[in-house]
Length: 282
Image (tube, rainbow, N blue to C red; front, side, top):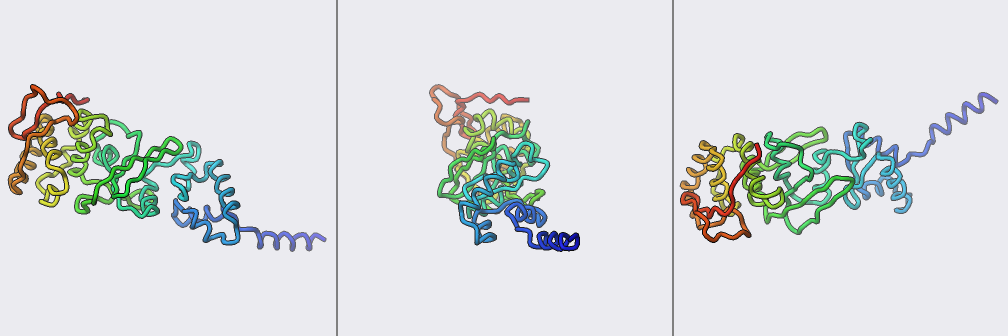
């Protein structure tokens, strides 16, 4: 009787049902941190969509996985399961590949990599190409998407993460993005505050003609003016030298867009109408 029971136990173990949980654990062992619903369907073709969704929903409730986009799931490592969220840099490259979009991490999130942020940004900002993607917020994580017609590959850097690689804007592209999208980070003074720390990482002497065709000239003018205000003399000299090299023509432009310019002084060098006083946080 005992022998029969042992044989039955071995039979049960050998034929134990392979579950969605088992599969996700195996993905982790293989270094995978993300998967799609389509991946799950391919692995469990005999399961109905309802059965699969229910299984995934249970794992979400247990904080084993998180649904960061419709049909896209992130496996939460043990050290993050108490909060049920995971740093965006762990999965953003996987998400953008799932969405089949070119991208780079920008603004304050890029500045962090160059030591130019006072604190960890509360939102995660991506630049991608059209069509537009709506911002998404899940479990306290908000991802904002900004659009550009194209992405200038020469000024994109790759950084290694615990789960692979990510793409971030170079210091120079980060600087111009901070000004171009200043409204999203709290205004031109916030942009100047970050730029004050970012400037040391910038090498404007390496800017190409393509860069000036890519970044609107008024953004370049505002950047130069802010660098002057911040007394970043080396960076100012490098930037102005390249501007002269490529014969970039300036027109009068306000420092702060959508703000009155009546009776405001003009900076002759950068042709900036000074309709905003710059005050940075030390």
